[in-house]
Length: 119
Image (cartoon, rainbow, N blue to C red; front, side, top):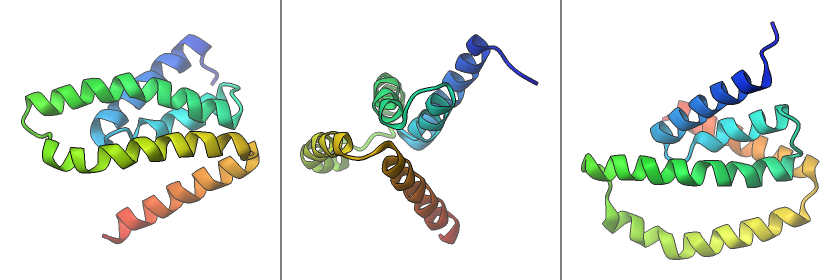
């Protein structure tokens, strides 16, 4: 069964939004492979995933804040160096080949999955 592009994009958007809300920016785990399936090369898929998940993270954060689940005292500990790390990561990504980027992303997803199942 083949679905049209609009339906594919809508279903992907819903899945990315739900994962982002559930897992805190976890929508990128869905967005990157779906963007690649839609024809984007790996580097563009990763960069586009950030543009997709940023507004979703803001909305999720506001919902968490309103519900009393957001711990600002913990968040502020990570933000300064996290911003620096984001810039370094974006610059390093430019230097990687698409195939190496895909392997690194895949390895990180496997490691994360194994760690979750082992706990």
